[in-house]
Length: 414
Image (tube, rainbow, N blue to C red; front, side):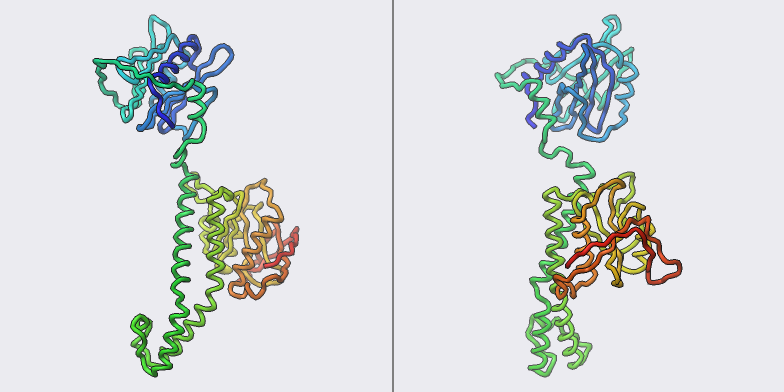
């Protein structure tokens, strides 16, 4: 946002002088901000001071505002102890010192002052009351300006400045946990996409096929220069030949799944960029990932509205996922089909639509059938859905089977 010029600072001071007699009732502080609540004439006024180094500023707001988490600063305690409850006598624009505004609080016989220094990289708040003083940063001595020249500048109104500051600002909140989580997730997705695209572009299956054909043609371990690195000199001719065609077949069979995985990653990336997926944010130092909480391995699928689907890598992983799941999470499984179940993580009272369940079930089907999924396109499956409170592992069963009740069935195609 555009910095406040001298004319705009004077408008702020004039507005504060129209509020003389109002009482300072509350003080809030953040990482780089101070808010002062004034009350009088049946209404509230918040004076908000932005102390970020590049462009410190001061605004008169109609309501409480914050762009960051509250912080218990010593200055806040000092203000509440020595200035809160006093009434505003006047506001002064100490233009001889530069971008400095001072508030004076009664009584006149024993006043208290709050001075705001709004210099870039010299921002500060200094409070003096009852013979004591406190500052936001270590204060420096100020020298009076020898010449004061006020340029003829256009000035926004107090209301315009407040609206612009409270509105969207480039970079605002970029340091919040939510934004950090989003950036990290996008970075991981892009890295995975780049890696998959690199592997697909190299077409390793074709390279191994060429190795096998050249071995057959030459009847020796001599192949083209760029393919020589794929020859294992510790193996004989026949073993290298078998190895080359086996590698070619496995990589060729793997390619459809890689293409599907690439498309899934791109879809997830686009959803996050479009804001259609609300990423869970870590709080209190605890991970929100069910895999992390359960200590399990496996895959997860991020959906809109903060829903996350989890599948275990083994029967042991499935079991610990189920045991760690909250009672209101959903357990999902293909009816009459062996394989891993899926757990859908949701908020306690969060509604999950059939469309969202079907979307998660299709992901589960693709994950379970892997390379076979392409051959099963269009086939319908019965999908069991139940809250985890109605699902109980069978005691002593080593393959992860469960008993379930209160289930519903969805018909889903791959």
